[in-house]
Length: 317
Ligand SMILES: [Zn+2]
Image 1 (spheres, rainbow, N blue to C red):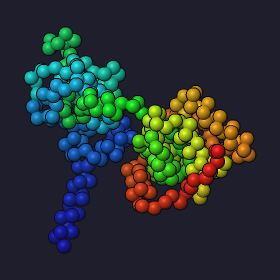
Image 2: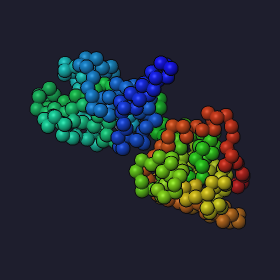
Image 3: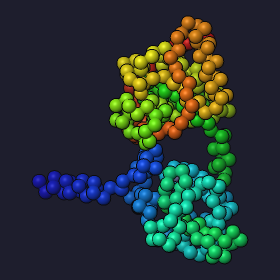
Image 4: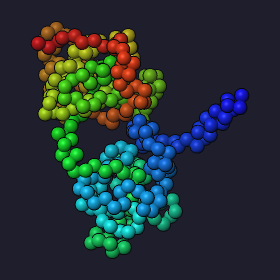
């Protein structure tokens, strides 16, 4: 009985003190879920780590410092200098990476990641440390450092492609098997509602489609191969959804990043239509991709089962 009470109290307290994720950071919810309570305290609640306690106070290695929440590149090691203030200090940021906002204290200027809004620290000017006369005083804990060697190793400029073909679990499952694809995430695209959750999209009125983001290495696999695979793992002729999943959120679409991609998709659609398929797939401009909740990612891989909604049908020669 006492145990049940303790569990209840613990649950209640964790609910009361849970750090709520601001709307700007929701697309990176799965990253935030992996952060420690103190990391959340700093990036979301605008906390400050103790002076001289952070991992990057003294680092001098070549590389870039990325946002802990969204991975955006924020600072270069070449702009880092020794300020003896106890926090990593930079006299400049990567252009456009940082947003300055008045601090709640009415005096200082807070700096946040321009991409996701994560709290970084403060910026001070006129102290005369370096020629640029600027000090970005940043919490180590808001950053993650990427060494230059690693950048070179991972540098094969990855590209992203976006597909909607019904239930995203199945599309993700098959796209992940393509050689040259490094990551596939399930999410939503095409609607007007910001930061939608699965149950918002299920209602069918957000305008979003269940979609996947395919991260791939163009040196290993072409966009055309991805599109061909996409047309072979779902039924591009179905007009009201996909398989048993009926509704506007399950429609077939390719979201293109450029006219070049649009031409590839249109050419392949023309090819299929020549073969007698009446293609329902829409070709739309890519917009913001909102990642779905973590339990939707790698769904079949984690369950160890095969997709109910998708199967492979050869449609190209
Ligand atoms: Zn960020």
